[in-house]
Image (cartoon, rainbow, N blue to C red; front, side, top):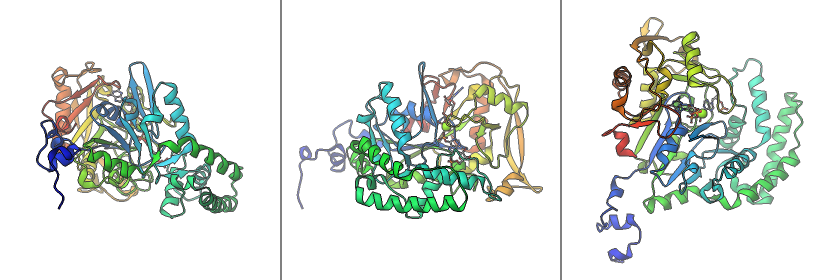
Length: 463
Ligand code: GDP
Ligand code: IMO
Ligand code: MG
């Protein structure tokens, strides 16, 4: 066997393995790759949390979804809404990776790149795109429209971005991947067959909307040239980066209750938003991911149709919508609002293995005299011990509430745990105790500095 001296082991990882790690490199043992994902139905404030934590990581990687996501980040007066590009792009020096599990509408991607570049962000330098990610074409939107409008089919209330039909083509093994765009002969053949399928489908369902299939093909050849320098095997890039002791933050889109397997099916998105998706959607082995951070609002919202046990259709919901500015970042639709749901959080903690929670938008509750929290589900007169699998059972759930006293003081911008009003701390302790997951972080406003990271928490250790 070849022998190396310590000096020849030129990466910190090799040096560490060889037992000759210099001081500082030993830190690597403690360092970890971490997932940040939504614990509810999306819009929990993942963008803000990722932007905040990205400073401590080298790479931020998206693993699923597409431009159905809308992650809002405020930096001072400036507002960014990221759809496809990981929020890490806003931190100078952090590499933003779009993993193989993401579906890409190239027109939307290029528009987002242009907007960010116009704001002075060096996208060309810091963005990498997986050659295995699938491409969304305009006809995917058309198919989605048809599916949503179909008689006797339950309308999901999607974002109409063609996300579902693109994932259908992926699992149907007829999809087109980014790498295919760079082989014109193969691309033409694949595209023409796929387009023909969709044309026939559109005709069968009497869809009048005209689509210029040849023009779409031509445009995609153009788009491909624009992104060519950014495209690579991102799984290999991430493996190589880990070898060099770089840290990866995985950015989830949507939320666990919208996960295609674990969410409120069929009222879900078409990808794996839960923690398991991070490995599949980037090619990073599960054994190399050391932590999962769940992001949850201090209450809960949902956009689109589907069961929502704690939805408040009265003045409470209106107050949350008004105070929390709960309107979709992508579609502008008013978000449905309701109360914190402990059984739901326990369920998402179970499927994701949350190490810690970041509770966002605590400040939105500031005015409330009493805050209801759902602590138990009842169904047909009995306590529910596991999350029902059917949407009909979920719709029939009778949530059981406990009311906690509100603090009726402004918490906006508080950045130290001890500065929170006693009752706000009691509320957070209640959530921690009932969900069984540490509340390691609290967000008290949209800005970076409007955040508390609790001293001695698992969150502090993970980041
Ligand atoms: P994401 O999809 O999970 O990234 O969340 P969105 O960006 O769609 O929605 C969260 C919204 O809440 C954004 O407008 C954020 O700027 C805002 N936000 C995040 N954290 C806080 C907070 O602690 N307080 C308040 N008032 N707003 C917040
Ligand atoms: P972020 O990442 C909230 C919802 C849609 C619809 C369902 C399926 O910002 O949290 P799709 O277009 O994905 O097929 O729609 O999922 N949805 C979201 N809701 N936040 C999101 O993303 C969402 N992405 C999709 O409203 O109910
Ligand atoms: Mg959002």
